[in-house]
Length: 352
Ligand code: SF4
Image (cartoon, protein in one colour):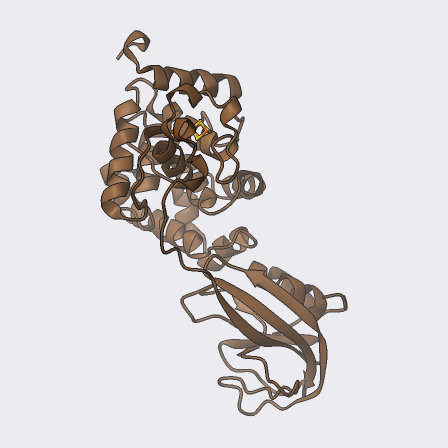
């Protein structure tokens, strides 16, 4: 479709994008692998945070075969601090899946949807941005812009409403610039059509926008019944064994494969702590001292942690998944962001 036949909404959006587009390292590279990596990193994570991680990751794993050949622990280490580690594991598995099939990247959205960890959004983003194909990529920003712009006042968490949002987005998408169109919607949602106090006065779509005219932009999208995060209390213990501190590799689904310090759920009301740790029946912890508190907010959970320090006989041999590590060994392990404060305090820094 030539530019003359584009909808005025599409034209206004693309003109705005051409004037305001952010310069980002994964843009305009025409490489589906690079788009894939960037889109996975950008899920739930701010652009400014992702940039250095993306550059480091691409320098060490410049193509899908390099990523497929890397050990999972090493990939997780590259992800340390980004959070949502299942993304890294799925990216790695996806690379191995592609490598096992000869190393050729999928050529359209349907092919990308077959790759481990790639859903409708990421498949649409890769197909439109890197392959120039007309495919919707509906993330939180796009949901917000499209529901407000087109006045869609239905529960946006419902799959049929999501499909309607994708259809309304595709109806506006120009065939010659689908990737720019999707990125323009994402950028507008990230910088102008923001959740609270949208900047309608500087929005290129204001004269077309249903919610702006109705005055209810801040109420959209409708997401009834959103669950508040669950608060969990922990006692976390830095157990010193000679020059080492005790850690374990998580086997649980959440933060699977990452390293944490010993943690016991639920604060003891007496203020005393009895250390009782799975698979460590023979470990006697003495000199327990309370050293501070730390909090970490996940999307679905808030961890309130009381921090303790104690000692155990250095000759005790921890069994899997426990390990006693030196300061240098601890530095080399992948720990989740929730462990940032206790990690800092493990060897010296007393500030919580
Ligand atoms: Fe969003 Fe306001 Fe622009 Fe409408 S006019 S798309 S509500 S920023």
